[in-house]
Image (cartoon, rainbow, N blue to C red; front, side, top):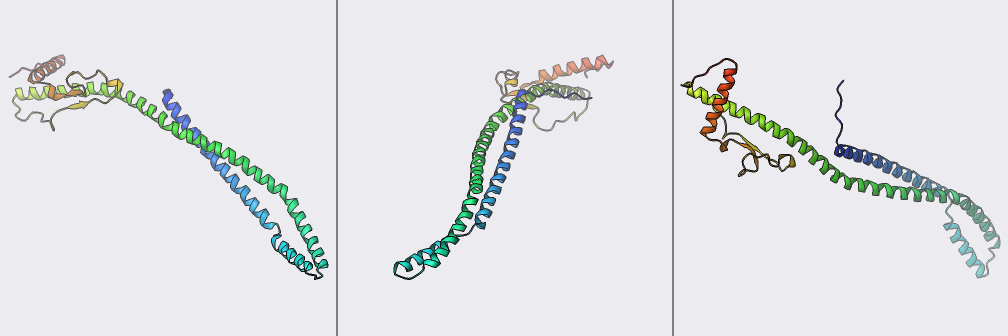
Length: 236
């Protein structure tokens, strides 16, 4: 079974932040849904209650009529009884409406807290992500430096073989496309001091820095490798 390598602290921090954002976003959605449901219940209950405004307006008219001597006592008595009955209905409904409004207030406070937490997590994410990406880049930088050593060595060997082919009469040796091999440095701690040429601190390898003497030395080293497998290559 393949064992999974332990995650870096920076990776763990990013994953925890992502998880916290998902949980907080889910909580916000749940709170918003609950608030909407309470608001709908308030709306339904309020629409079911009688509208007293027309009756109160009618009472004002009756009182005005009484004030100018009209006999509206029986009518206003019946209207007051109706208003009392309807007022009792509104009074009975008030505790439930008040409870719903208080529930909304509590949900709104929790919503504001969750929204503030989500904003904090979003702001934290950029910091954590930069740390994670820089750590990842540094780790890749180590691999990059190691790979440069491999590719530059292969480059030198191919140039050596091209030189040997020329020495043995091949008129078209290993033609190279482009101007040579350039491996640039990145601005990473893992690459500090890795540039072999002090005058070119931004290059891990650049074939332009090598002369004919270097090529001859590479050819000599390649001859030694060939001797190790029993091939004695003579220079023409």
